[in-house]
Image (tube, helix red, strand yellow):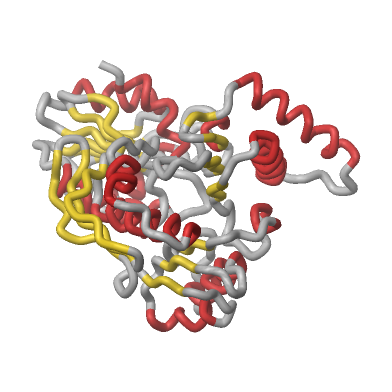
Length: 360
């Protein structure tokens, strides 16, 4: 959008409303437009030989909306892996693979290579690939799909010299097309600086031209992604983060001490099955929380609060079970001092109920 293009985006999951998944120029679709769109798509659903999934219906709606609105470019996030995902019906001008993480897998065999192969299915032969996965042993999986050119993080693009700033950080970004120093990024976390470099490289690869310092600065200074180290209240500081797999949790654990050097740390945690809650608390234990309040996420797949409490206690953490999300957040805020941190995490499903409960 900062480059003057009318950009649509289709992302998942959402935090407060499904309409967050569909946006143009940063503005989510209106209720009226969304209703009309689903109505249009539903006519085809009714006559389809097989009933499409929820995600397939939303994907079709997004593509229809972008076509109707004649966007210049669409940023489309894959839902599951890639090769057989509903979004992979489009031929992307540029493909982006951020990393290979322990998600949507049972961990059997060489799971990293298997997931890499599925994600590589989105790569267009002879078209650019922006690759954030730096495991050397996986590179051949992506090369075999024939991208051209292939831009690798650390070799062709990256971020360095991140410094904390009010509301975000100041970073130096570099890409195959240029260097952008002293860029204010309105998001917290070293991993977000890496993501910013990846985003710049992706747009430049699509345009086959540098963006320029002014465009990069304008794009990065006003970014806001719900549920990613999102500050929703101060004194005490209340932060929402939907981290739910080991890689995301490790990024969260690394970022919190750097960004929020608060007094005590009180966690509010909910989780979905079939993930092992023990792995969740193994990572969160590195934050040395003073108290963990576990809740039951509002989902049929939620791990019950009492089960989370047992798993948490087995790791030697001080824990209380408060099944209702909002009640758990209110209790955490009540227990926290003005200089303490309340961190709500474990699943995007807990964030919607947490936001209003955290309001001062």
